[in-house]
Structures are given as C-alpha cells and as structure tokens.
Picture 1 (cartoon, one colour):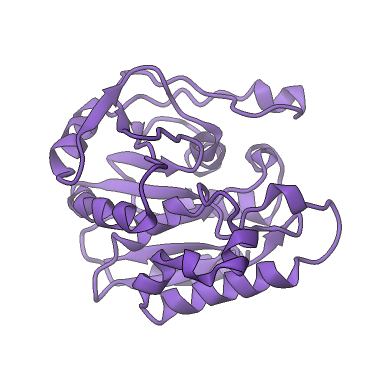
Picture 2: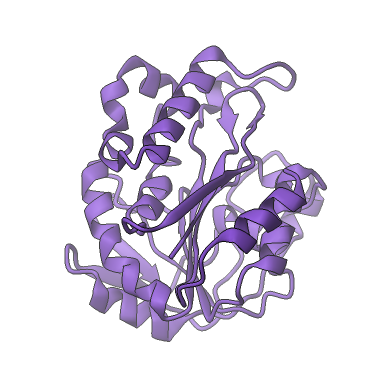
Length: 272
C-alpha cells in the first residue's frame, strides 16, 4: 500500500480523543520478517497512529470453544503457532508487557458472557507478527481476548459492543484475521480466484454502505461464504471491529489486495 494513502487516511480522520480501531489482514506469518507492501503498511501505522496506552488483540488464532478468556499475565510469551517455516521466523520474540489492569477492566465491561482470566496463552502470531512491525520496541502493554467459536457471528458482534469504552481509555483494539481465508486453495503464483474477489467486494460494499448486519450475517452468502471462509475463524475478528463503529465513525480501507490467491489482505481503520 502507498504510505501516502495511509497518511492521508489518518490525517483526514476527525480527532475525537478515542483511539482508532483496526482490522488487520495478517496473512502469511512470514510478513513478520519479510519486507513487502503489507509489512510496510504496519510500520507506517505504528508511526502515524496516536500512541496507545495498551493494545487489545482479538486474533483468529486463539479459539476457546464454549468459553471466553483474556490474557492477564505480566509478561505474555511469544507463541510460534505454525510449522514448516524458516528458523528465522521461530527465532522472533515479542517481549511486550502484559496489560493486567486493562484485562480486569475488559472482564468488567463484558456483560454478555463470563470472561475468565488466562495465564497460559500469550501472544500468538496473529498478534505479534503485526505488532513486531507496528511497535518493534515492544514497549506497549498487550493483551488478547479469545474467540468462543461455538457461538454464532451475531453473538460476537453484540459482545464486542461492550468493548467500546476501552477506546476512550487509550486502548488500541486490533482484530487480526483475513476477510477471505481458504488455505486449502492457496497457490504460490496466480491471480485471486473469482469467488475470492466476489466475497471480498461484497463484504466491502456492506461495510461501505454501513450495512453491518449483512456483513455479520455473511453465512447467508452460502456457497460463496463456504469458499471464502470455510471455518470463519479468520472472519470473526472483523466482526469485533465493526461492532466498535458508531454512526459517525469514519471507515477507510487499505491493503486492498490478495496473497496466495485465496487470502484477502484487505484491512480497515475506524476512527471516532
């Protein structure tokens, strides 16, 4: 993505005192160490966003069926939750401090579910691969909220609305997943599939039209949704970020591209 475009997006957003919220298409874990347009955009974000007091990450890679957890340790570990990648990627560490105070506030804010503290998880690659680029000094407290995959998308949207207050407390909320995510159909070279483009453009149109209900009810797209999100764990973080938008919120897209033919890297930022 053109760094000037991202600068213009942030410059033109009204200032409300709230932290923006981000949906990041994180894609290939190698984006953590490879220099490309995606990792460059994350670097630009870290330079141009207001500095947060803490970061809450809702990552596609922390699934806890039947329950919801929030990390509450002082020093979350770096989780290398992948295999078959170069040793250099496994050597990466992200020693950010935890955010125990904000984790406690999150538990108090969520009214729809009983949220448990977690002292075992840490930061998975949906979180640290992005933050390694955005905030390489790892000096901002980070905590994660898990996804109860047993619940329907509508449940996640309503639950996420309880998190809005955190934005007023200086917390940057990041949903990390992918709008289109089908690993079984990846190919190293080639154009994105027609169905991948169609789903990506359909959901983008819903968001642009402020039709969040249709975006949340993406499974009504049936066969198209089944191809684009065969397990939809990477779609749920998008729903969380949509839930943080108000009627007056500005929404802008970036990284509007595909990787490996079946992974949409499209991302968006919400302000005010």
